[in-house]
Length: 375
Image 1 (cartoon, one colour):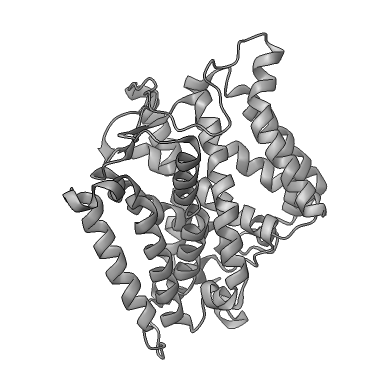
Image 2 (cartoon, rainbow, N blue to C red; image 1 turned 30 degrees about the vertical axis):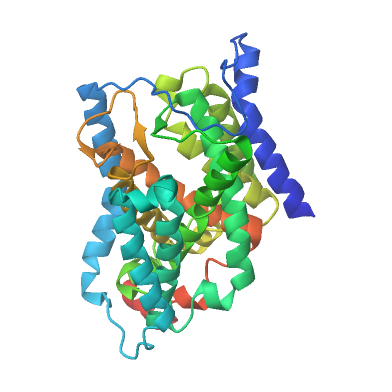
């Protein structure tokens, strides 16, 4: 019950804070504001190279320490496994499913015209099963088999999770959808919720698969400990800063649009710390950075496939990013991929706080000997 109330409070904060910010300064609410939007009108895209350069340097400086850490201990990398499990039959079926859905998404067969707008969930249901099969092949376990109830809850949880971002996008207008078919409200809500339900399972499945590669996890098993991260002061600080930032995105959306990805993470982190719920960030207190690194990489990898499969699908999204809309990879400006990093941490953190997922499952534990070698 405590966790349910906590999640309900988080949802209220995330939905209400941008409106509160507008109300405080006397600004009008967006005229077409709705709880379940699917925007079809583009926002304003622009490029300012000095700002682009500054952000590129800032992002590079942020990523440099973990990249250097990984490179420094590359000799410890173990990307192969000595005794893998046999690749399961259902993994082969999932691979065939993904390939078939990919072909259907990028082609326009007349016999498939009715279902052509709905290829997104077809691709991602197959991807989720395929990644679980690869995880099982490498580790002998996967969340789909070991925790089917959690996996089922993730799909329901994920739909509401991504609807929240669609709601917040109404204030910044960073993406919109193209070729959305006209449909009754119930049908529209069903198909879009089905697509959104794959977001969290996809990131978590990728996270677990990446965790089977010791070459990615060993260098970060014992890095810089931050014991203060678990303090109540840190929790309140993250919660307050996240709330203040989210309340301002409607006031200065052109400048503060990156807060769309940062503030929900800060709010979730703060709430998790205050209710003493173990999540991604709690392991940093002991110097274990693996959940942070792997969750960020998981979303970045998912982001590549999201953007790739989106590029030539009939119904797809396009971006309108202020100041940095240049050098696109598929539809996404190159700097926009940095947004996937905090988003991945948020996905795993909300799964841990909301559904009790253990970020330190035996799948990703490294022995004390390995920790000592990584120092």
